[in-house]
Amino acid sequence: MEQTWTIKRVLDWTTDDFNSRQIPSSRLEAELLLSHMLNVPRLYLYTHFDRPLHPEELTRFRELVARRRRGECNAHITGVKEFWSLDFEVNQSVLVPRPDTETLVQAAIDVCDGRQRILDLCTGSGCVAVAIASECPEVSVDATDISTQALAVARRNVTRYQMDARITLYEGDLFNALPANHRYDVIVANPPYVVASELPNLSVEVQHEPHLALLGGGADGLDVTRRLLSGVLPFCNPGARIFLELDDVQTVHVANVLGPQILGKQGSTIQDLAGKHRVVSFHINY
Image (cartoon, rainbow, N blue to C red):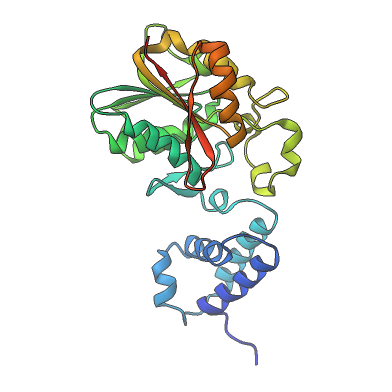
């Protein structure tokens, strides 16, 4: 007699299947997909282990599993990603927020002690801008992105957390998006920095991300960062702080080479929880 496909059986089977495909955190991935399909909290799955899935539910769930097998990330399938203990809408137009980027948020928060003006370049989903504003209630934030589709996602996330009065979104390429008279106390960015030749070596999930937000240009992936540093000073208030998220080799190069070349000053690096040099920092104290 055929076994009933209960929540527990479905979770166990999917976890084993994801494990066999080297999908990290396979149990969590299975739970997130199933709770999304059923439109219930994850806790519900554990309090209803014996609940059978209806045939139409099984069909919908199999479709989600098939998408994950093809390399589409869980966040793009469910349309939601947690970041800084907040839930953000995501889709194929924005990078999926990653825990590493919380290092960038924390760096900004650590220097916010009043009514600073913050600039978030390459905002994507708006997660960095919203996270900073959620922790620093007196700051105002301008956020820019070159992508119309990404800004539409950011706008919904800003509205979701009722921050329309504190976060202003601008469309355009880096500083070209901004009014010329705007000046900032803290500037943060997670710019594109992947080298095009390295993209095929990255995970299939990353390869599904928007290339506009990934590829930084040039042999070292730092062309966007060079343009950013070259244009930043006219938008800095005295004493401004600049924080850029890059990979752990690029941060050291930007701090020690590009900073002195372009800004006339050396930067420092900030490590993430894994001990990698995740963020490069500059203090514009002149």
